[in-house]
Image (cartoon, rainbow, N blue to C red; front, side):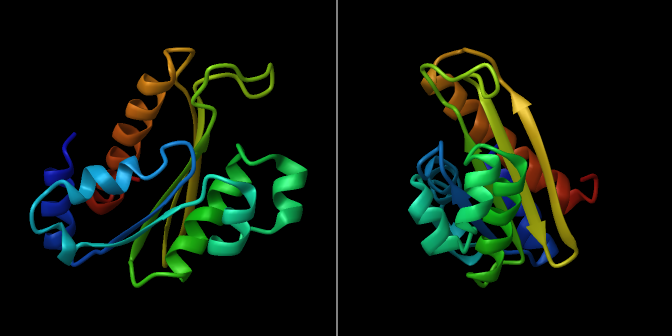
Length: 157
């Protein structure tokens, strides 16, 4: 799945995109903006690596992070909704996960939570990429986020 394909579909649908990234540190935005002409589709990206950044930039409630942990579907949902509300985008994707190395029994290396928000609501999901190494988890997360965005634009999400 390429960012070019995503941007072509977004253009055809009149959609604009924002990202809210934790474990990828801006790689999704970087992948999208690597494509020439992406500025008419990509509105902005929020890199919210710390919990404070999630709260300050995206409006994620500190209590939500304390209750569920930063790597959770409720936080991914709040991040996606926050990015949508704080941008001019019509579609926002969020990611928060454990890139590794390490993790815990409850939240192992390779566990990533995704959020996908638009005016109709928000979809969340968790993917277990496994202990495939930090770089590979981050790369797989970017690919999955792009696929989620495209699926939504295609009406299959």
